[in-house]
Image 1 (cartoon, rainbow, N blue to C red):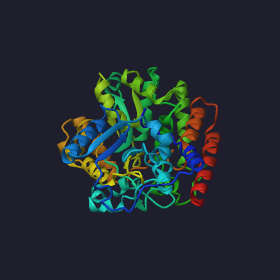
Image 2 (cartoon, helix red, strand yellow):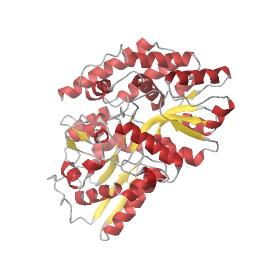
Image 3 (cartoon, helix red, strand yellow):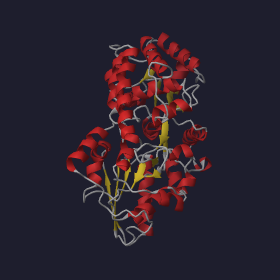
Image 4 (cartoon, rainbow, N blue to C red):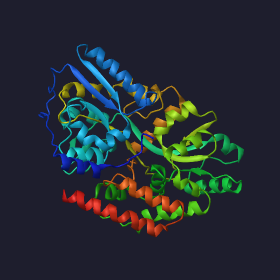
Length: 436
């Protein structure tokens, strides 16, 4: 699944140290860099039929029309291929001029702190990207000199968003007399109804990101913005043995005990969760908007979505970033391409193909289900309700969370033990980042 947030930053740091790589391109930050270039090499890892894949293919067509003397070389890469080797790739002669890269401190932030990405601040102002993106969406585009998101210079530009919600099978809800919940109590009552009918109500996947995101959604039910700032941006220390994290872990364990979540899901991957929902076997899953387009094309029953009941904060953020490697020889062309992806035509294409555009007019989105997806995102984003993702704060944290919540699902660890297991790597990682 392309949205797995597997943080390979520790390996990347080691690779950088071993090879002694440094940014080697000219980097004066001016809009004229590479203006005489006659080629543009572009990489991303979106599927050809995904909302972003469709929209970006059209953006490439427009770029070619407006730059008839430029040769565009596009390569679709695997997510893990870029994630695990980004530092080495973008410093090589074979690297791209512009590419999609994962946002967050341990990915884009790490590369920016290493001097491997181009400062886009002047371009963001000149081209109006700073006006098109809300402050919450700009969080993942900007990084300080230590690579911590939320302030400092622009090192990337997102042109779509993403967020975690509840997908539900309307046919199964109707069959078992369950209505759409609007509070957490109503959600648990709905799950009790399914369990009483012998149906496991909530699909998840312990071997990859979904379990950690479910835990985070539960924690966010008791959280406020100050918690998010502390956890994600290190404003103040985080107590893992207190709410909201304590509540998240204890409630997750309770949901397993009550049969809301299957113990067998400890070994399941995200694809297993998704295909079970597609097959009509699961009443609900808590996961991200990245599934939406696929569900639209593959699901044969009646389904829909709703925001996690009662939450004002939800896991989510901008989408991944367009970044320009520091040694790109066609920076001006790269800026032109990024700018095209922000145009109304491309934003509408993202929305009309099941994606979440950051600068689209919902009234231009023809399908009611697509329009609701975008309106819900806009509602969360405009209320400063995007809380990012649980594995973002420090390098290597993705694997820590996967191991922790597998133990919670299969009940080999207590909530206290899991919180202890995830607290130390977090504290150690934050200390390392603060040391710079």
